[in-house]
Length: 224
Length: 122
Image 1 (cartoon, rainbow over the protein chains, first blue to last red):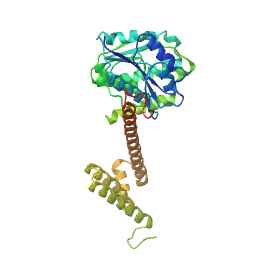
Image 2 (image 1 turned 90 degrees about the vertical axis):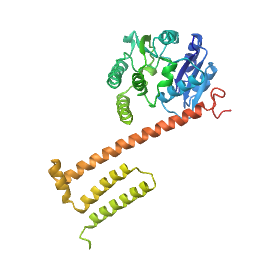
Image 3 (image 1 turned 60 degrees about the vertical axis):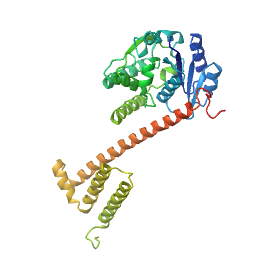
């Protein structure tokens, strides 16, 4: 089986990151890399104590930049497959195998864990923003994603080597979809559970963030 | 009030300022810091502003051609377009800078990985 590296991008997640790392290790994955994106709350220390390798950004660069660093780190470690999941605990580590499955079986280059199981528990505002993001993603890359903004993704080595995430902010999820379409990668989605707390529900959401994300995507389109 | 050249002080300042800006761009182009396309673009922009500054009625002619009633409105309209262009260009530059900063941060973070996972904390 290809070497699997778990990547956890984190910014000020000291209260949850250790549990996420331990969950991934308990699921049978020993190579866990936490990308500490310039945290100031001891995220790196908490992750290291939980058993993860830690790569530290000196300054906060954004979620997209942290994922890209994680993918580079996975390639350095010789990963055949990588999996990204959020540090805030919204993904269930016991479902890692489900997301990895299609990539390990060679059926997909990129597998997205779509937060579709018990979708009614998803806060209405998150559902609304997700749908808006799905429409924008479809408009820009021509493929409909059920959950384009999920951070739970499995990557084949081909996907890791092909996709370059230039965006730093939340627009990076749409950029991944666009890059996947550009390189004609095989993409699939599998349903996963999302665990929402008050904190995770509002992360990255908001009218201003949404508008900024759309604006940045338009700018990036013009810059290509 | 008119100067010896027949221009008002305001017109003279505008023309001199535009000439200075054209000379500056030309100097940057000569040192290879601006492309020929940028040079032509800026000569057209500053030349146009200087021309309208020197002969304000030229704006009426341009306005009539564009279908705008007055020369003043034409100047405001073109200024807004120019400001919009400069704003978008600034966003592009900032985005580029942000990308370079991220790349630099990434390289520093991965410099000694996986031997030393804590750069600067040996």
